[in-house]
Length: 283
Image (cartoon, rainbow, N blue to C red):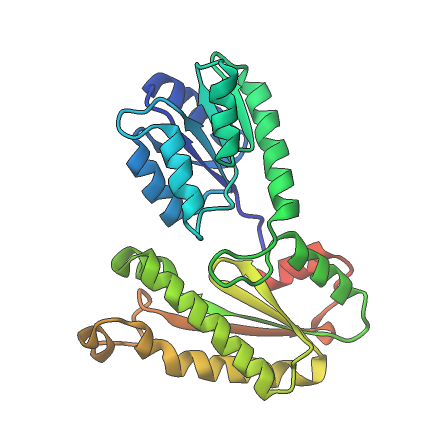
C-alpha cells in the first residue's frame, strides 16, 4: 500500500509567489492545491481535505482571518492545521490569527526552507493529536498503524479491508455532503456486521477516507468479510439520491459505486513488518 502524498492547500493571491511555493513543495513530494480567493479556499478545503493550509491574510474577497474562522466552524475542516502567511508584523495581528486556531504565523519575505520545516513540524503535531476521521469519528493514521503493528505481534490474526470503489466519482456528481453520508453509512454497516459475527471486541478504523479495516480473530475474519460484502452490495442502490439513478444501476459500469472487500490472515504469508502487510494489502 503506497504512502499517499501529503496534500496541502496554498491560498495566495500573488501569482508569482504561489507558483514558486507550488513548484518547491511539489518537488518535496507534496500534492499541492492552489487558491487565490478566500471563498474558493474554503470550498476546496471542504472538498479536498488537505493535510495543511498555507493561508495569506490579505486576499481579494474575504481575508485570511475569515477563511480560518469558517474552517474552524465546520466539523469537516476544523482540525486542519493552518499557517498564516502575511506581510503584517504587528503583535495584535499575530495574536488574532493564533486566537482563531492557526498553528503558526510567518511573515513575508520568508525563507522557503524555513517554511518547509515549519510545515513538517505542524504536520507531525497534527498526526499525533488528530487520530479520528472527521466524518465517521473512527480512528485513522498513527493509531491505526499502531494497532496493525500490535496485531503482527500475535501468532494468529484476521484482517478485513472494506470500502466502496467509485466514491470519488460519486462525490463529483452528488457533492461532498452526499459522499460523506455514504461513508458514514458504510461505517455503521460494518459495525453491525461486527456485532452480527460476535466481533464486539475487534478494532474498526480507516485506511483512508473511504476504506475501512477491521482487525479480528482469524477464525471469524472470512465470515466477517462475507457479511460486510453482503451488506454493502445490498445497500448500494439506496446510496443514490435519485430514483432514476437507482433504476439505471449496472454492476458492470466501473464508474458506479461497487463494494471492495478483502480478507487477510496470518496464514496468508510471512509478514515480519508493517511494510510487508501494506504491500500485501496493495495487491
